[in-house]
Length: 456
Image (cartoon, rainbow, N blue to C red; front, side, top):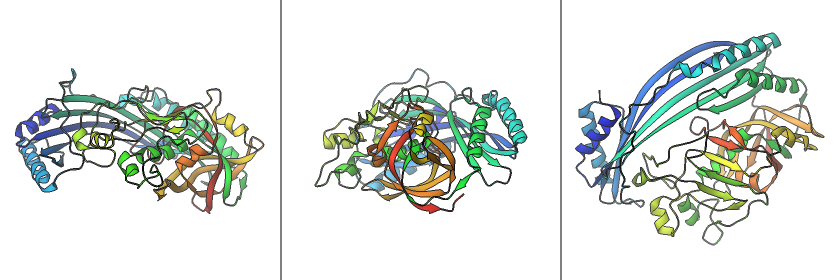
């Protein structure tokens, strides 16, 4: 069995073309699931996967593998080289990134295991006891993974990065299953997660839901919690590729040509950015890309990732550039990072404070099933989930039916009335792919609930 470093070096040694990049990921996971106020399953896994990018002139081909057998490594390199020869010149072709070796490149993959749950499990037991005494039921799961990345290239670059990722999601239901509430947290190691505290907060929401109110579709002043703001703005970040904007096929394209860089979205001093150095949501400081698209390029593997602002003080200020698109449009290289932050809210305001300011409107718990309606306006649709509450004169007076919404994240920023302090949050819809966000709650004027949903 080859180590990750041996896979890198064997693949590079087998290369017979103009360039080669190898990225190996060692992934170690541990998870716990629970239902009906008891732990039901747990498990731990170890997996190794890797991909090789072969470069032939201005063409590239990628092959993925999970085999550490030396014979399979060479076969994967040959297959990538054939793919590159068949692909033809790539629009994103660039010289491969150069550099030296990270000091820790020779270290083994970082460990993981059930020890990471040492603080979570006692809190979980307390939550189960409290839920049982209240006649409520808890469901949920916690997962933790430690990914150790090894990147090597034929130009001498050797990079290593260890990325811990932890999430916990809790659903509380009434005994008749008619009422439900959800909460989720993103964490590195669960030392900052109090499941018993989460369950107490969910119990309060179940109490709010004892009064059910039917409400028609319409536009409502709505308080979006940080998790819902994250789900919407992640989509905005994913849609901020520079090339689609310049080519007139995105919400960031200006009518008649050019881009919307410089357009003011809001008078509030909001800044949307990614930055791999921000604690506690640090992410890989270099590009890792198994395939090319509008926002990433396989030729950029290993290139440094820095702070990248998409919105600055309320103004659209940046788009995502590969090195190739940056050269083409005379802009700075601006790769995406694996985190996203929105800052500029009032540090004195909490989500609860935003609710107190609503004369008549809604408080959401979370959004799900988010899909694109119109990429040219970034109009999204989706459903509310696990609790929508009617607010009157700053007080929550009951739970209303779920809705389908139609709203663009750009309009969320344009129609933002009040913004709270930012906090680390877990996006619910995208938590399988994107967990490192820091977002505020946002009170939005006229959030469009387009129809009533019978989804529960």
